[in-house]
Amino acid sequence: MARTKANTTIDLDNIEENIRGSFFAFLSRGGVDVNNIQELQKLKHNTLDCALYAVFDDLFKPSKNLPDNKRSLIPYDDNSVLTRLVDVYIRLCNLTDNDSTMRGFSALTGIDDNTLWKWERDELNPERREIVKRITRNRVDMIENKLSDNPIGATALANNSKSLGMMWSRNTAQIQNTKAVYIIPAEKSRPGLPNETRGQITDTETGDGL
Image (cartoon, rainbow, N blue to C red; front, top):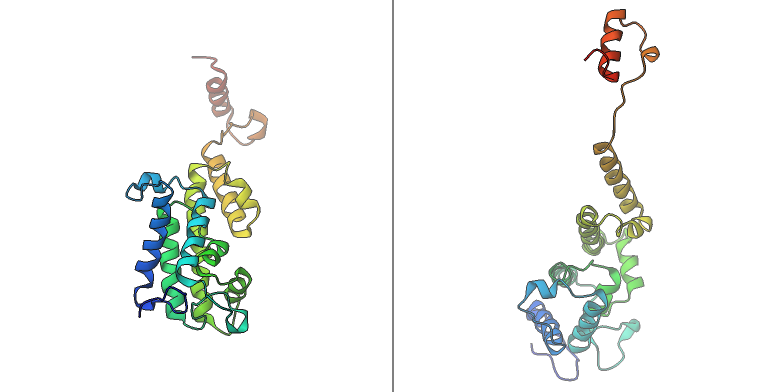
């Protein structure tokens, strides 16, 4: 089913292809070489958001008010469609080396981010909850990969997330352990050694007798 110019319907059969086409067309108009992966991975987050908003305007923004204050033509109650949307969104984020966020997914789909946060905690619809949680999980995975490359820059992100904070602590502890210096205790702190053995250790530590 083809989408009309007035945005009264959406083409669910080709939704992924249409999203990618609209996304790359916007970037191309801005001078981005969409065939150059290195250039795509340099996109700033605000540029990504602008491209996602452009896709929404092109594909999902309704031409008239919808019931229940819905802002998008996307069927909210169809988990299979939601899964496909999350899939393509995560792929675009990974391709451009940007974190996946509820705000970004909201920009793409028009689904209010507060609604997305509610869905992520919805015990009555576990299937939808797990679908939406993938956005956050992918973000955590991406940040975890970046921690080893730029640990200082990731500190601020870790401070605002319990799970990332724990991960940051683990990574810091591992780094400190690899740099730890172990000092041989002084003679008095090691009672019970034969006098001859203590003397050998002392000679080794001080260099005496070499």
